[in-house]
Image (cartoon, rainbow, N blue to C red; front, side, top):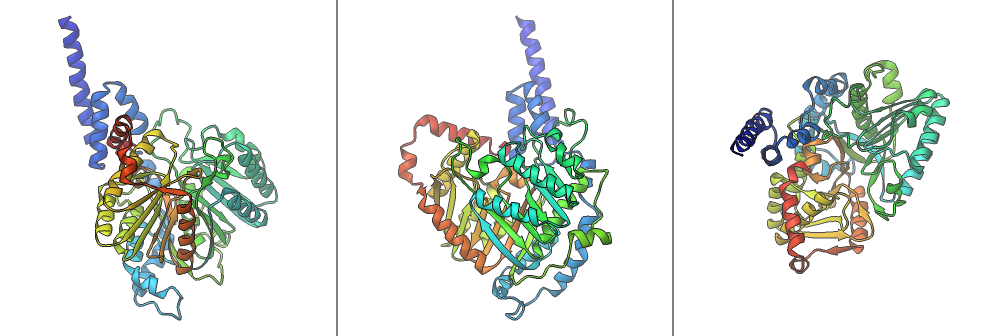
Length: 489
C-alpha cells in the first residue's frame, strides 16, 4: 500500500511540475492562466488531454500567415486619414458631430486594428433570419463577378443546401465564389457537402485547414466571423450564420432573435480586406493579391451611394494581445454620457469591462443589457446569470429575452454610436476567437437600433433582486461554479 501511495504521490508531483511549466511558459490572461492551472492540477493526466484540445495557443508560423499585403494595402490610406483628422464639418457629412466626438476611437482603431474610416454607406438591419436570407439570396442572384462568404456555422441542413445550390449556380455562370467555414462551428459539414460548388469552379475550405487536423488539435481558436461580400459593392456583418436554427426552424430554440447589417458603400472594402486576409491564410495554393490590378477591379470597385453612414471594420484575434474589439467596447462605454444599450447572448465580462460598466453606471449613465432567457451552452448560461445578478446590484438594468433565443451582439451609445458584429461580451470573444465588428458612426442607424431595443424589451423580463432571492441553493452553486470557469468558456 505504501508503494502505491508513493507512486501516486510521484505522479501528482510530476503532474504539478508539468502543469506549472505548461501554463506559465506562454503569456496569457492571468485569470485564464490560473484557471488552466487548476484544471491540470485537479484533473491529473486527463487535464493535459483537455488542454491539448482547448488550451494550446496557435503556432506562431501559422499566425504569421494572417499578416502581409492585405494590411499593407490600407496602411497608406490610414496614414493619410490620420493627417487629416481634425474638425469634420456639416458640408462633409451630416454625422460630423458624431465623428468629431469619436475621433479618439477612430484613431485608436487605425492604430490597433488597421481599420480606416470608410464613409458614404447605406445600411440596413435585419433581426429575423428569414428577412436576412431573402435579401442575401437576392444579392447572390444579382452577383456579377464575386461572392465571398465566411461563416462560423454553415450547416448542411435545408437552408444550407439551398445556399449551396444558389452558390453552385452562380459559379457555373462564371462568378468567382469562395467560402470559408469553421470546421468546429459547422460540425457535420465537410468537403463532400461542398463538392457540387467545387466541381462548378467555386472554392470552399475550413478555416486554417490542413491535412493533419487530428494532430493539430487546437479547437479553442474559432473563426467566429459572419462576413459576406458581393461584387465588392454589398456586404453583410453581424451575428447570423447559415443554418435552419437562425431562421427559427429548430424546436430547441424556437424564435431566433439576431442582428445582421447589410452594407452598400465603402464599408464593404473593410469586410473584403478581412476576408482576403483569412482566405490567404487558409488556401495556400490560390492566394488573392489585393494589390493586383485585376483584384482591385474585382474586389475593390469604386462604389457611389447616397448613404451617410461612416464605419470602421474592426477585427480581433488570438494573434494580437491588443484585444481590439474589447478595447472598442470599453472606449464606447467610457464615452457614454446618457445611455448604453447592449445585446449579447453571453454576458461574461472580464474585469476591465466590468470596471467600465461600473464607472459608467455610477456616473449616472443609464445602462440596459438584454440577454437570452434560455441556454445553448449550460455553463455559459449559468455564468451569464451570475454576472446578471452582480450587474443588477450595481443598478444596471438587465433583461432576459423570453421569445426564443437572443443571439444579437450589438451596442448603442447615446443613440449615436453603434457596434454590430460577431463579438459577444465574454472572454472567448475577447481573447480566443477570430471576431469582426462594424463600429458605425451614424445617427439614423442609432435611431433604428433604439427601436429594435424597445421591441426586444417588450418581450423580455427585467431581472430583479426578488428574482435572485427566490433561486435555489443548487442553482446558486451552479452559477458561482460556472463563474470560476469564465476564462475557459
